[in-house]
Image (cartoon, rainbow, N blue to C red; front, side, top):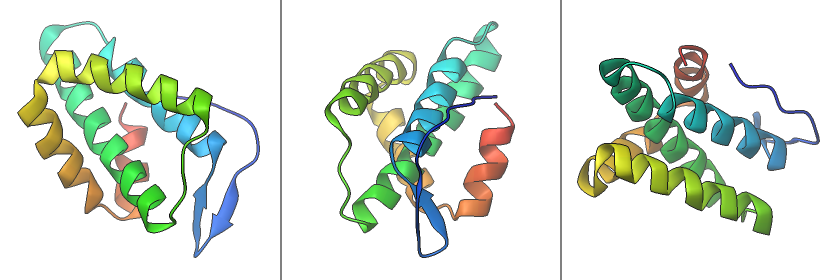
Length: 111
């Protein structure tokens, strides 16, 4: 579970902003650090899909990550790339791009 407080902007029935990005980042980092090799891999795969979902939403809104967010995002991607490999990470993030909000929330709740 991840908790991050702050401003979130509602657009077209979805929420965006530093707070939402922060939660996604915390979930991804937590997933990458979970104990147990098989559990950690599954959590890392879920985290990669969640980041793909967030990336797709940001792209749809033509929104950019703030500087600090971008630095943390890059660190998270590096950790996931190390855990999963470049090809698997790209495949999983593409899968997350196709998720709807309900699916993304349900998956995030599993981490």
